Image 1 (cartoon, rainbow over the protein chains, first blue to last red):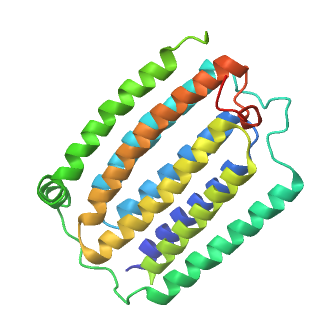
Image 2: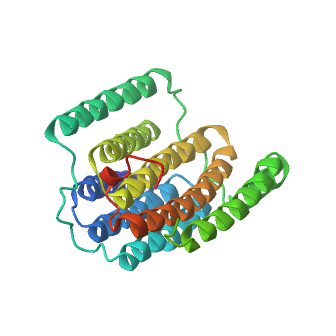
Image 3: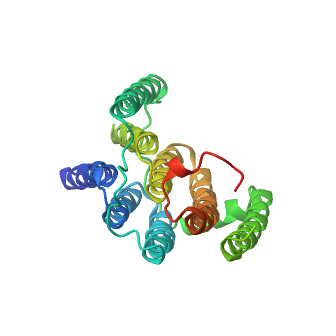
Length: 169
Length: 98
């Protein structure tokens, strides 16, 4: 692990956390979506550094490229680009409660992870990660893979039916 | 211990997503917070794949597929809600009937 690697790693990590903080504090849905895209790119960089280049590519293509485009498209379709008149944030008491829940959850997760993390350091990098993923996907996880395809079909039909329905009783 | 640090980043991102879900009222931003939580879990899966082999990568791909399906159906519901109420504010959604 060279210092350069370490620097890049923490750079991407800080970028992800900073962009996520900016994402939850934006009022306008469009800027929130763009900051979330930023989080996804930073995470994709982290995936590359964790020896998962295939997952990183899929992250950029599917998450940043497809899912977030759908979000921005819906924002554009419903003309929600500017913050609306109604207060978007909930009341102060709910916000304080949510902050407490967040801090408690974070402390919990950190405690659990500090406790049980085995002292494994980086395995030697492999030069081809796509072939093992594909083999595993089509042998060990074949049933889950096929079920996922059925789920996608159901989701397509459901989305079309829900979005097509007119607002009459 | 950079793997532990990656897990901590994942925990922080997940908590930010939870706080966002609890504090916002805009349904679209709420969905984006759920996506952020899914991304945090994906980071955990990649770290565990680094420790225990390639199964984590398979799960990341599954999670991405589920997230795409969830976004499609959820946004269709948001469009349907917008047609009915003229806003995507979750305050409107107090009744399941029309």
